[in-house]
Length: 103
Image 1 (cartoon, rainbow, N blue to C red):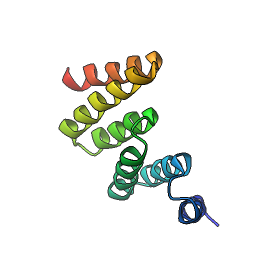
Image 2 (cartoon, rainbow, N blue to C red):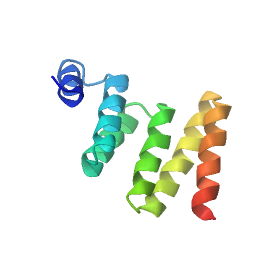
Image 3 (cartoon, rainbow, N blue to C red):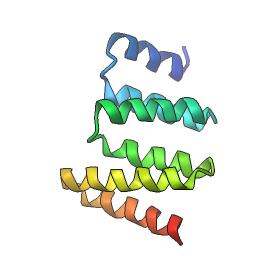
């Protein structure tokens, strides 16, 4: 069974499993399935708005797809999420990417 099938199976049994949903989004993105990956990132962030890595990786996916304005919005939301949880490292990483997109 491939990774995507395995992660989908986990999500059938436990749709709220943020780690599996993030893994599925990342695997889809790595295979070039941008729309499907972004849909999974969106579901992840609706269900778990403090899953900070989801913001950063979905912003990277959006930026790679040439969707800069959406990437900027996602980074701003991610910075807010990371700040709420006190994750200063994530704030710094996302701010650096945001500065790069604006530059």
